[in-house]
Length: 116
Image (cartoon, rainbow, N blue to C red; front, side, top):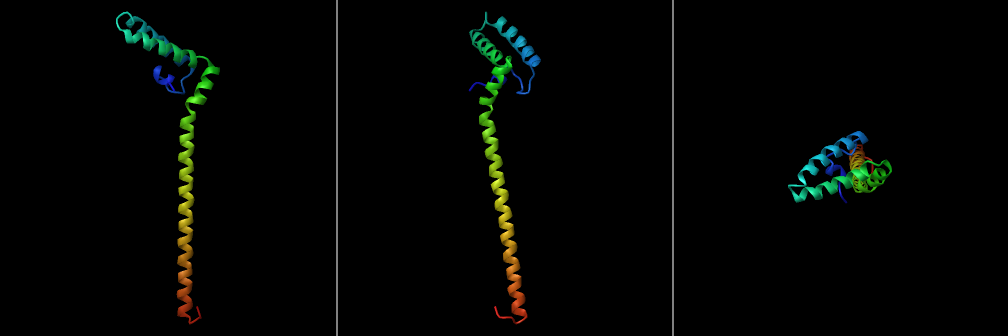
């Protein structure tokens, strides 16, 4: 998927004014260079495409939901992995404490002469 924010050199939190300003600046620069450089025409087409999506709130919401889904899924997986590690560490500590207390109880019972 194409990163329209990168094309317009904007953060995903940019407001409509920021999008308009970035588009105006980039399209003016690229329009001047299209006469000299053939790659500028392709870049201008991408800038126009990015602006067409990001400048319309309903299209931007749809784009963001698809574009950021992968990142949101990755972050959720990282959080789930961290939670599993926390639970494993807690269970390990509890298990170690149980063994320690049981060992101490057996030792005390031995010292007191109680049958084990």
